[in-house]
Amino acid sequence: MKNLGAQYENLDQKVYQVVKQMIEDRTLLPGQKIPQEKLAKDLGVSRTPLISALKFLEHEKLIEVKPRRGFFVRLFTINEMIGIFEIREVLEGLAARRAAQCITDKECRELEGLFKNFKGYANITDMSGYSKADRKFHTMITGIASREFLATMLQTFDIISLAYQNVSSEGLIRHPNDTIEDHEKIIEAICSRDSDQAETLMRAHFKGAIDILKEQIDEESKQNHSKEVINHD
Amino acid sequence: MKNLGAQYENLDQKVYQVVKQMIEDRTLLPGQKIPQEKLAKDLGVSRTPLISALKFLEHEKLIEVKPRRGFFVRLFTINEMIGIFEIREVLEGLAARRAAQCITDKECRELEGLFKNFKGYANITDMSGYSKADRKFHTMITGIASREFLATMLQTFDIISLAYQNVSSEGLIRHPNDTIEDHEKIIEAICSRDSDQAETLMRAHFKGAIDILKEQIDEESKQNHSKEVINHD
DNA sequence: ACATTGCATTTTGTATTCAAAATTCAATAT
DNA sequence: ATATTGAATTTTGAATACAAAATGCAATGT
Image (tube, rainbow over all chains, first blue to last red; front, side, top):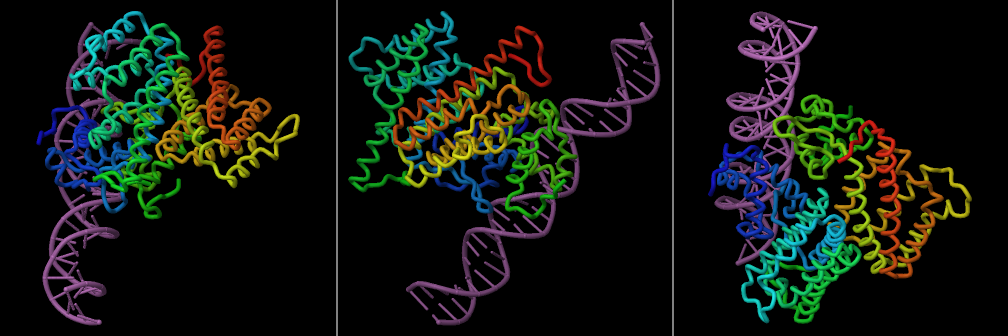
């Protein structure tokens, strides 16, 4: 394990980053209790900055605190995931609106170039490349909208969605064929400065993901087969 | 100053509440540096839970951390306030939508009763009573929508708006005469389970507040008179 | 009078310590 | 065999300790 001591300005921040990454890449598993002493030793720091980082993550809902029992990696129900996507829907809708209002011509060209490598292919096979472009698409729009709060909030929810994608990979990662058209239309609306349309289309884009989640609930309740780390409300 | 030692489960949480309150009621002023040792002593705790609480508040953007320099009460520009209200607009819009989908008849009656004391008066003079009802209105709707994340996020922004109201009281507190009709229409939409309409009306309600803020910017830039704790981007 | 330097003081970031609470686990009872 | 009790051990919550950084301030120089 990487020793973090002394090489960064603030240990809190760096421990926070590392632990967050560990949750994302499932080194720390949902439901698992955090072994404070051990993890702190592995990271080469004392419990103080680790606890500080865990409390940050509690605020982001990636960590759950049970008083006097410890810190646990949080575990999301599908219903909670729907709630999170609904929030992303309205917040990214707002970001798209704001982006349409303040985007520069240069940013427009960059945005329009994002998916050009995938355009025109009947079937996209470079999933990881597309997925990277997709991520860039969302962060660029938020960046252009540039409202500190909005960026912070969306970052939080982005990570959560990502964590979830790893959990139920067959369910949430949508194939480029299904989403590239959405992306192009949103970019077009933003670049023609049509803020109403940009918001509407971005929201519609998220509604798609939400519908997929809702279908999952229906299926599972029918088959009554509950997956590993997902339990319902 | 109240001594907090021993009377609560977790000192962090309680220190957090108290410090938040101190920022809200302006015992701690924007821009001011937090005297850790002194404040901890005043509260009857050590620096450990105080620092923990301050880091929570940093996440909520009520506190700003300058590494190696200390914690400072944050200071909002009008542009930032506009950003915050835009977020509240979409999130409370979502809350209204969800509330319309899952409200019970009992909750409807409670909601409808909220403003009955003010109804029919040409001019409402009981400002603090109305302001309390207004707060209840928003928290009830969020509560009915009942999505943990949504509630958490809105709570954060609610506090910030409140802090701001204290700062520039002549600007943001709107007179009941201007808002009671909005409230009634929103309640009507929610109680008739019209979720689209509920969202639309709630968003329009917030747009009003945002417009007021934007007018303030225009006025100030014209008069070039900058107020005490407000500085612009 | 004002700027600069260097020492003394204060404050911060982090580790360590320690009492109280929770957990484990073996011994005993049912 | 299973349930219950109660030490021994581990873990948590919070205070304290301490080195490193920042700040204040007085002495000196311009």
